Length: 187
Image (cartoon, rainbow, N blue to C red; front, side, top):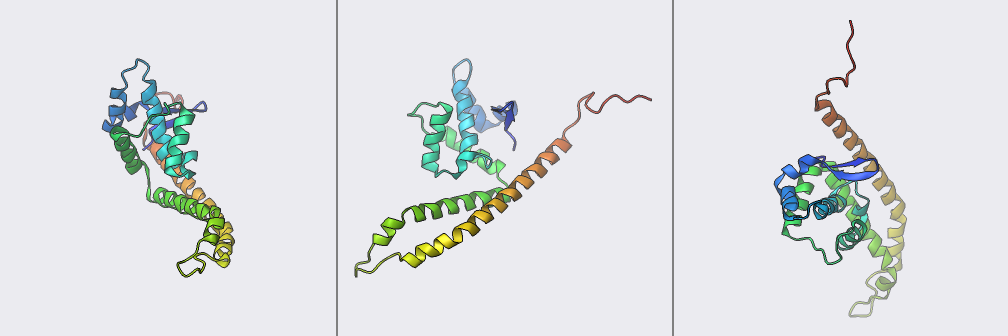
């Protein structure tokens, strides 16, 4: 599902998005003339959910805060039922199997990163008997696997991009050409 488009270095919402019920609800509730809030909420959905979003690597709660700040939504803005419905709808329609795997891989890598960031706390943690819960070899073993994780994530991203290009080409191939897009035939 291609509802968002990058044109002239600006992310825009395609008009047909508002024909879908979850997105129409966002547009309808924005009573302003220029529909600025609806546009920001649609952009929020893209940045929060889309596999191509740079924000996807951020943990969900922090991601919400960052996106709100970066797109200019009010600080007290929250994901309500209308937004959650639209987010769920977009995610269900836009993610392929490869996209789901990649998104899960990012979450696992992020969790691993958080584990390693807490190494000092983990090393001080003790059981009821006074033994260590996490040992130094456990942490260093994790560190040894980081380059392989990074390599696998890069390969996964490449495969995902390849799939997206294939899907884009299929979509373009299914569209009709305009009257003069193919050039003029002269005999």
